[in-house]
Image 1 (cartoon, rainbow, N blue to C red):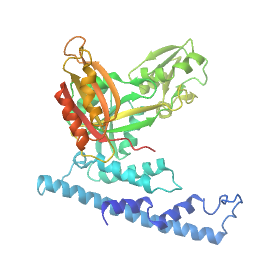
Image 2 (image 1 turned 180 degrees about the horizontal axis):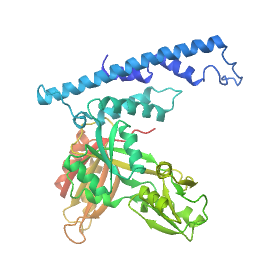
Image 3 (image 1 turned 45 degrees about the horizontal axis):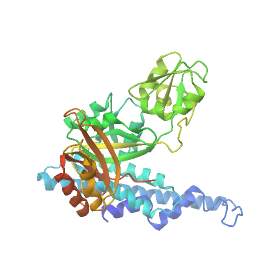
Image 4 (image 1 turned 135 degrees about the vertical axis):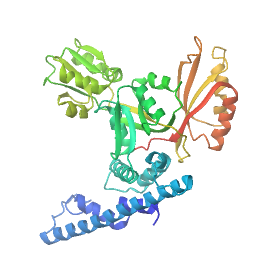
Length: 411
């Protein structure tokens, strides 16, 4: 049994596991039948038999999970042996393969036919892979803290819970810790669906050698929280500037007189709400639990489909996964010349490359000179993408592939 087969078996891809999962959930034996009639509950003898079958399946799942862990360890030792001879002290960062994990998750979604939802299947498989990778040592992943931020949620969504999450005070520190090797990877927010780009993250790439190794899309639901139990007595609202912007309309309607205070993170706003009289915060529900605050209002974001995209930072470029995105940092030879951007990007159109995003930022080389951050579909090593990038490079004064990485696996 290879790693893929073990993964499929552990997920319930075998026929018996699917049946057992349906019975465990009660959908086959105790719910409403397709015709609309109510099924009779199982007799005591039948219930005991069902539980016995579930117990047997649990034993099989446990054995398969351990087998998968052994196979994953063998894969890691094989890679380490090939790279460093007989040395067996494989580091988790060297063995972590984002493109491989993305392929496993996509296959899990393709074969999922219920009753478990896609998001549940993805969460289960992330945790399985996370635990298998952490057998030797857990990955160290830096993020913008403190505890309770949406960035921490993005870390756990992408890497699973078998990692060591390192909360840092600023985005700059996240970059620095990964650059220095004190963290294996970092996670930083890059854009929000309603408020747009987070520019200080972009600017850090101008001076950092790091690469983008992945992306995470997180649905963001904001809550108003504080020591008070209602809107009465709130004189200020603290949160990150992005969160304040995402809730601008709600605040204008419900707290028009309250001062809005921008802080380094939503969790910092929650800390201030805990410590200051009259201060409320906007943050995720987890922050209320961490800081012991009352939830005054839920889902106060102005747009119900509010989402934030995060980037995973690492020190190396990745092979293709089959469904990838590439991020470029480029500048034209003369950014003030008529048609400069058109001529720079023309090779993308000539080779049929879809550009999903473009942002301009000051180059810091001279006044009124700009660089462009561009997201395109495909991997830099795909033949048509490679040809397009060669043409773009010949027209650019600055050209860097920041990363080619798996697109976020949609739930």
